[in-house]
Image (cartoon, rainbow, N blue to C red; front, side):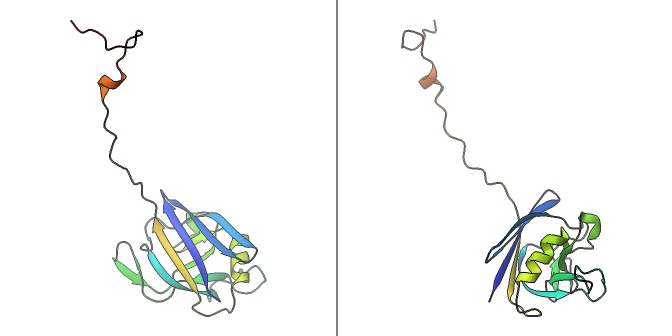
Length: 153
C-alpha cells in the first residue's frame, strides 16, 4: 500500500495532512528556520530514529524518514537525517518537521509495512496568487439621486 503526507508551509508554521482508512490528520507542524528542507516530493519510510529512545511504546522514537540526499536551504546542501517526528515547537527540530507526538504515532502506526519506501512526502510553500485588478469605470457609478449623471459645470 502507498501513503501520502502533505506539508504546506507558511510563515514559520505549516499544516501536515495525512489520510488513510479512518485516520484523517490535519495538524500544525514546525521546523528549524535555519535549516529548511527544500520544497519537493520525497520518498518516505516509516521507521524509528536510531539515536532517540523516547518512543511512545518504550522503543526508539517513531518517525518518517525522508531518505538520502534531501536538499535544504535552497539547494545549499543535502542531508540524510531529515525526519518527520514528534515535537511541540521548532526548538525540537534540527531541520526535521515536527508535530505533536500523538499524531506522529497515529500516522506511523497506520503505515505498513515499516522500513519500506511506500510514502510520498510532498512539501510545498504556500503562495498567494493575485489576479489582475478589475477595470473600474467611475462614470458608471456616478449617478445623482434623479438617476442621471451629475452636471459638472
